[in-house]
Amino acid sequence: MATAHDLVRSAVWAAELAEDEIERARRGFTERSFSKGSYVCHRGDKLDYWTGVVTGLVKISAISRSGKAMTFAGAGPGGWFGEGSVLKDEPRKYDLVAIRDTRLAMLNKSTFFWLYENSTGFNRFLVRQLNERMGQFIATIEYDRILDPKARVARNLSWLFNPVLYPGAGGHIEITQEELGLLAGVSRQVANRSLQALEEEGLLKVEHERITVLDLDRLSKYDG
View 1 (tube, one colour):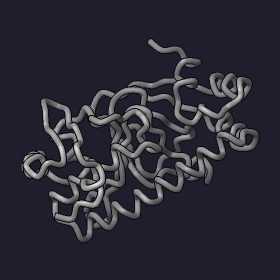
View 2 (cartoon, rainbow, N blue to C red):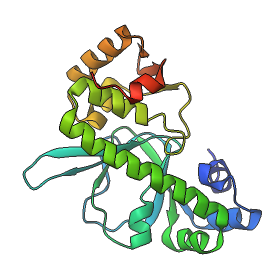
View 3 (cartoon, one colour):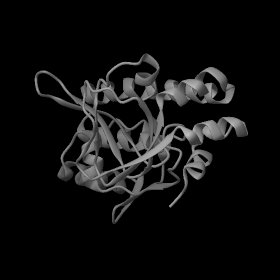
């Protein structure tokens, strides 16, 4: 199993950190494991950690007062999330749910703020991350309001290949149809039919618990 030092060095945000900054980050690291279906954090809870996925998959979602469920994003291996809530020192405005067995790397708030106040490289990463995340959340609202289920599956899948938010993804992703359905807000059956249609259109290839994207540009702009 990788050590805390290994996890820090392999993190996408550590690429521009100096050695003393990496060592400081290592001392603020902890790891936790969550079983499939368990909550990492409930909406309204404080979670004083910036959080990254080592293995597994996390759904970032909320349920409105009317009972409507909405998924904002998914976080897979290499992805980090929650910087906005840590910076604002506020309760989480969403639920965090492990949709498969998941191992998380967690950077405590004091170390996060030390890096924020002292590391130029860390701040450059945060600006890129926040910009990409804002674009993702705005796009998700658009998907939910105007796109049909197949297009929502296509667009949500394309986000999992964003190199800033999901640096662990290459040309394919290990994900089940049930998991993709949870991220896109559709049933497993709808996700299955959508993937079959997208495969027939030459955008991707579906294998057992794996999806290979053949045309990411078309997938990211798919509107049915």
